[in-house]
Length: 274
Image (cartoon, rainbow, N blue to C red; front, side, top):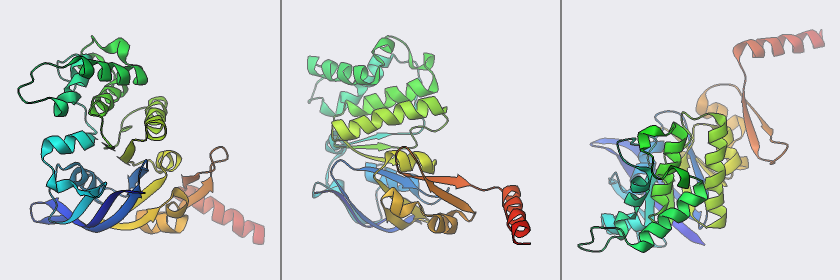
């Protein structure tokens, strides 16, 4: 069942077209990873879907409804966006999370309702951050702040969650913890997710679809097995790529090869032949 459809999307900043005629379709409950080299248009695409950037042309449909026909409040009830950079200002965790309920406030409403509080506690418990509710954001680690930001986005009760590199600058332990929780949201709560990834192996392990961008164009779209092929990646990243299969999950894994190791491998191959 079609959930999101992007048609001939052209977007960017001022007169600079960073995205060129992007077209793709996703079913409900998808987990899409946006990948590609620096400057390929990943963040521009995510911000355009979020409504932060207005496209020069093209359309985005969510459940067959044009997203750009919605006002900001209605769009925020359907789509939640989490930036790579979390604001760790002087605010308590509970208040930060509750701020995500603002799109559901009625006219002239000032204070949160009991329902707002219950939904906030629900997601804080899910993410295991209830114990931090009375702490200030600046007192938390980078990983904990990222979890709070995702929690605040989810109390909007969106149909689509957009994440801009949710595991950037985090150690491997926190990367896996956060992505495991996001995957649970995707599979158990049927929340569709679109996230930017720089780590191709994390994208392969957690996403069921990948969109590979190059110079603002959609170079390849499909499953991780269809996209993460060494010939495709070598063309995009301009370096030698080795691909294999994760023996546990069966998903592709991407391995780099240094110049020194390549020379050694070629020399060993030559020695074997002679």
